[in-house]
Image 1 (cartoon, rainbow, N blue to C red):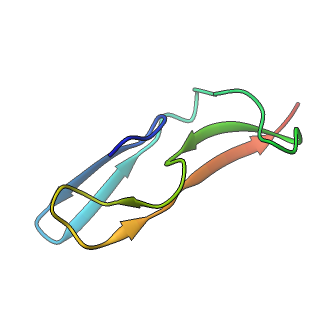
Image 2 (image 1 turned 30 degrees about the horizontal axis):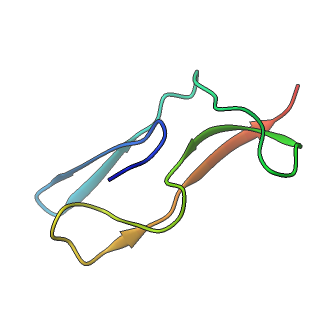
Length: 62
């Protein structure tokens, strides 16, 4: 999966997602928030899987 600051791993029937909350990738399009992590749209949860996910993590600008 191509994503910014998102590590996703499937173990058995569990999807584990790790995001480093200390990182940032600039402002969101609105300019109101700082982007921490994103999948950049809908992505499969893993190779050969039919499930999909979308994630965006952000915080207010200081």
